[in-house]
Amino acid sequence: MKLASLALGISLAFALAPAAMAQTTMRISISVAQNSHQGVAIDTFAKEVEKRTAGRIKVQPFYSGSLGGERESIEAVQLGTQELTFTSTGPVPNFVPEARILDIPFLFSGKPHARAVLDSSIGQELLAKFESKGFKALAWGENGVRHMTNSKRAVNAPDDLKGLKMRTMENPVHVAAYKGFGIVTTPMAFPEVFTALQQGTVDGQENPLSVIMAAKFDQVQKHLSLTGHVYSPAIFLMNKASFDKLSAADKTAFLEAAKEGVKANRARVDEDDSKGVAELRSKGMSVVENVDKAKFVAALTPVNAEFEKQFGKANIDRIRNYK
Ligand code: EAX
Image (tube, rainbow, N blue to C red; front, top):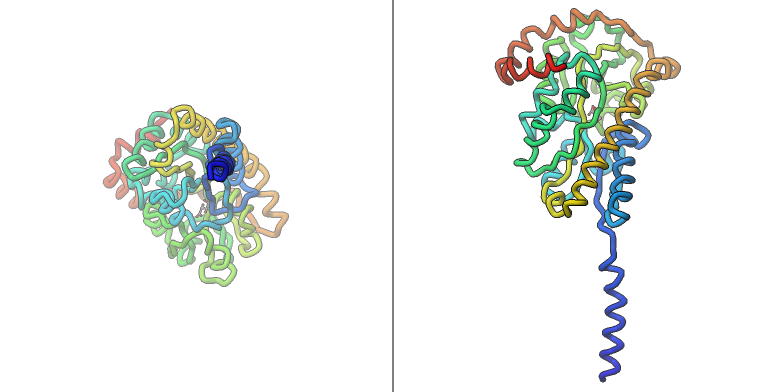
């Protein structure tokens, strides 16, 4: 009897030991392919978390929207059914309306300006807005400067966009602005876009060169115009309760890992931007490099007046004039 219970005790101890040492595994997702600016962001993050927690916490990356589109992933992180996601700000305003201001077209003069703002106290203040919505926003990353593609015609000026049916992100600021360009807007989750372009449900879409290449849109789009009409931020989001449960040292590990992820992410965007036009041309796309930018900016005058009313001119100017 005694011997049996001793044996049971020993075998229980052996059974429990691995459990006590077991790693925690968390999930992180992106909507684009692994071989992309977002793939390097989450792969770097995963590697850094594992390294900085001595292997106690493992982050498992999921690519290509295999856990759902960006809106669904953000929802899952908010609910806690998924711990982490790296997403563009496309669907973010539906969760944290304060972040909408970053999606205004022609707000930033380019990537250096956008990165400086996101890394400044303005960016930090916006990250803090996610907390009351159930998120810990670890860091701003980058999706890139968005350009337009379509299957119908070369686009040099907003007049060429009149009546073009284009997929947009599920983002109210983009939808309002693109209507100002004369586009027929069709908001849609990213995982559906390739098929929609292929089947002609929409004529075009807009995305950074990084995304256009990662998604192989050159296979279903003839024309690319470097409109650079809007900067598209990205963000590392974590379920707030999952973050709060971490020790102080592990919290630092996650925040530092996100910073490393952003460095790799931005470097890849720069690389994609420098080789993108040549690569997409070699795949058969016809590219307009110098669009009539002033006309695109002018087309948005009425929409911008509306944005100034909604978001406060001072708030917009604070970003616009940031040095
Ligand atoms: O995050 O939905 C979009 O067009 C995004 O730019 C894309 O999924 C990358």
